[in-house]
Amino acid sequence: MSCWIRLRLSLLATATLSGFLVAGHAQEALNQTASTNADSRYIVDDETYEKNASKEVDRLAKEEKLISYTELAKKTLKTRPGTSLAPVSTNQLPPTVLAEKLRHSTVAMGLRYQEPHSKKWRFMIGATGFSVAPEVLSTSLHVMTIDPEIMKAAQAVAITEDGAVYPVTEIVAASDRSDTCLVRVPGLNLPPLPLRGGARPGEQVWCMSHPDGFTYMFTSGQIARISRDRYDEKHQPSLHLEVTAEYCPGSSGGAVTDAAGNVVGQVSSINNYDGFTSRDGKSVNGIVSARTCTAAEEMIFLAKPGENEPVPIPTPSSVKKHRTPKPQASPSASVAPRSNSR
Image (tube, rainbow, N blue to C red; front, top):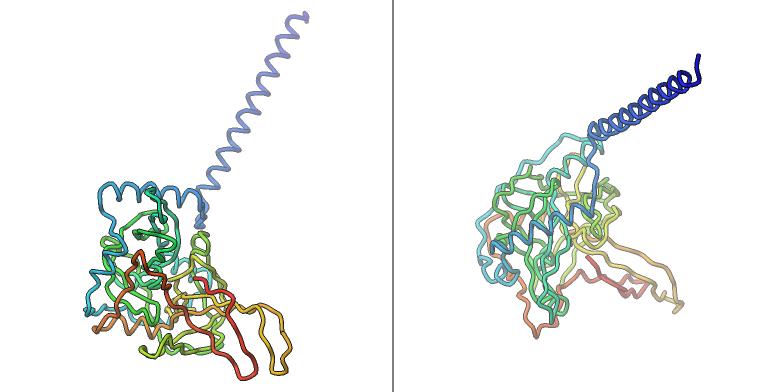
């Protein structure tokens, strides 16, 4: 066999082998794509989620469909009409099924805002809300108010798990005393979560929220205690749960539920203590975090017809911040809060 024929056969063999390798790599890529497409899990891409929401919010702003917090506060009705709630569920769910159920009913609360002395509008995912009725969400009232030292204007939207964005158009019911409210979001029809009172210490609970922009975080813990907090002498004390389920700022308004998906509390605040003085005058160091939730009884009360508490309206001269539950000193210690964040 001539050298030319051998060379040609060698080239053909190399080309055939290369073709097989290329085809093999292509098939592997197709297999990986198919594997990815077949993955039924909800996988979060926080950057893309917030970026796409920001674009949609800009579009809604140009169409003048967003309503300012100040306008929402001023237009809140003095009497609330009442909201029909879903019946309490007795069907205990495995945690993986519960996580999916809560996700379908939970939204991220997006905030379009202006900083003081600035004309530029910014956007962030800053809180959590959950469905309690068609077009009605529950969230913390402080989510729907602003500190004029931080912002001079703001507008709120609700963002679903698939990235759809809906403007918040009305505060239906409000309680500054218990830091909770019901807001109307036209067009948003998510499965409502039932509200259940009567929760007890020791019950296991789960929380779905967006701590620090980490969307759809699912944590668990237990109810540590039930407490009442009085903000001032003018208001009746409100009912709270302290829980061990993890959350942080951005979780405000998130649902805290039992194993059946009934909401027993709503994320409200974190009270951190970094030390105290004991009876004998010695300093005791250590950090304790009390994660305080508005009890479901307060939200059930807001779903009934009645008088709304006034929604705080920000003014340029205002320096008063939204009240947070005040820790009570025990007989054996004088405790001072280091920070209150929600």
